[in-house]
Length: 454
Image 1: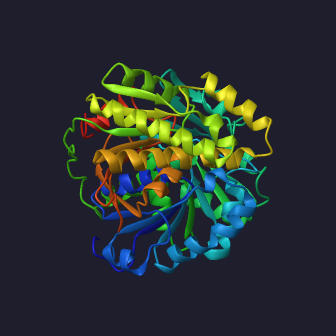
Image 2: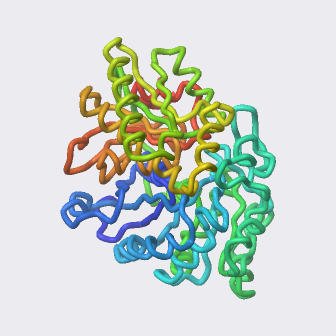
Image 3: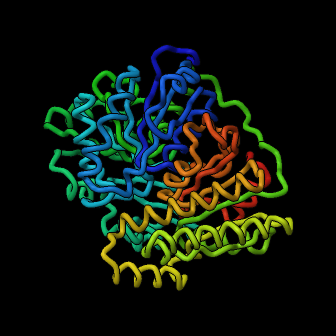
């Protein structure tokens, strides 16, 4: 369907890493997909006029309902105006949300004002990423194994949106009064999903959560949504939605089997920043320190002080990174090496002694790290980079002035090496965006090697 005037799909992401993951699924399935960092200018949009699917990334996951009400309608309306068959509000596959941060319920309410839909399918699981939903409960995998979300070693202690409920509709009920229903594995496995959908809509359900565990249920989810796209015009979920749709399209022959993905090839050095406090990222930082990366700590407490202090810390970290590059090492500038890093406690202590709120301070960290990366890339001439952390990725991308991304080479699902597009200094930059809890231990080295299948 490449070259169609009407896209199959348009998506709006509540963070940058997840937004890029949608593009990755579609691109490596052979579709023409592009991700914009904001509503594009007419000239930029024209460059991608033949896209099968297009998206806009945001930092909505780190903001509250008032911010959403002010900032979601514009880009959602632009995406709706493309005429895409399905409009997808992209959320994290670990359902990161609360009434005050990344409120998914409020986002659905706003999106329904833009695009009417008889019901809104909710597809959170993505088995390819070790995210599973069974009878309404979400499970997620980490290095140590697969855990129910309320017992997950990362998500249960997330610093902003800790998960104390694995039943997603119960969790969502704290964020919206919209009635909901579940289409479970039994309905998907037995072939009765269409009847279950009719019954749910007839009883007034506006949000319909869908289980997704393995190829059979995933195919049933994709078929259900695509065959009912005239009344399920708005969908919410992770890139699991795209995985399900792609499986259905391939099964029916609407698209050809996926082409063979390739590596982008190795480079000697890369520059990376990390704003994640995840234990998974801590293990990746430790691997990098033993494999050719110089780890440079950024003092996050500096963002709580005055502008001069932040500028001084940005300058210090930039200088340290440039000196490390001169030795032949790659560089990784970090805000913390896991939740137990002393910098985390120091930041929280500084924040509690100030009048600054957490959301603002967290954004300042992301912006500062982005500025470090921008300066390092400009002064070193490096053309490959990594940003680790969902919120950090959004702020970092804007600091770099990158306006659009297309997928270049795969790594683990959800963190491909991409090609940046802009009218400015970093046009053509190769960059990977990685959520904090995602990736293999050698992820930064994998990007240095050019990504590609293993």
